[in-house]
Length: 438
Ligand code: GAL
Image (cartoon, rainbow, N blue to C red):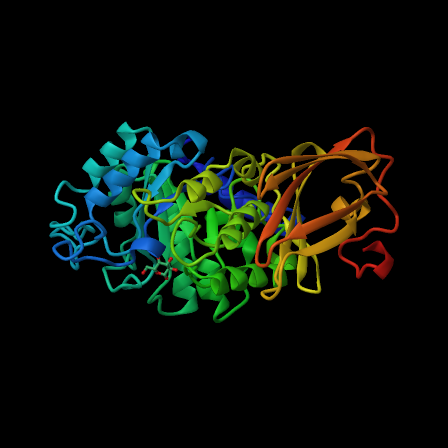
């Protein structure tokens, strides 16, 4: 548990000033939370706004659903590998506030109340997340928090909530959107409870104005930039493309305490082939993304479960250096991504975007990785996905031939060996490479 954030308001102002003066790497929201990307389960993509428990008793948004997921998170090994937050999304509320103006859950679907649900989740050693909206109404039309930020933050804290996903529908003016996100952050902090603050601020802001990520990181633990994920390859592709196109403005800001959120993992559902599920898991690790599964833990294939619980991939996602990865190149439908890891190691993903034909081979020099440093003078390479394999020792003049299925990904971990003589002069990932490098 991170330290309860009680007194950073003054410090925050001073720090904000320092940032203006110094520029450079942005300070994260100082609540001690999300030092590595948050991991858990979130209901939205799989269960949406199903409120008719008579018709859909097993999938309606009810306390029973979250209790069952909490049970399975413990009994089926999810908690052991790091998934910790059981999160409620939209549609948990009653359509009106109570007589003291507080948000209240739908009484039929949450008859025991959120406090009891939080107690239950905590008794399992897990944490509870909840959902609210900065505007007048949530995206699904339930009461929004506009004008009630302090009251709602206090209500969530009184209930024992550990994470707030704060949506941005129905926000009024841009100023109200930004004020709302800032005020809710301050309100959560004032409660003295450690509550992870998950924002959609830049996504809504971008519709009107370029987001200020330094400020967003100062107030939020993670933030959505782009549209909702769907259970479809088109959706995963568009998220990856958006991220790669905007990497110059979003990668450097990510770090302990503040992460870009490309939205939920849909592995274990219906829409992605096996290779596409590998791609989502590998690239979410490269992107240092929060890992919120949205699937049905009661019905999940052993294969999907093993992928989501793969400790080597999770270790890359949770790497303590906390740097987000980026795309190095895209050539002939083959993409090369890398993520710097602690100890001078790199995670490397090769993705085949060609949707016709069979496996493609991408051949590249190891000197292309880590700005020339990853295998300099030598490195050991471990294949992490699709299967764990030892690729042995390589050096800075080695060539790698990586065969990748259509829409699939091969994920590698490259660990440098020996003293590096320094950066290779001819390498610069931000510049167009000469053809003979590949
Ligand atoms: C969207 C949000 C989704 C989900 C939904 C609920 O705006 O991006 O992740 O929370 O609202 O209505």
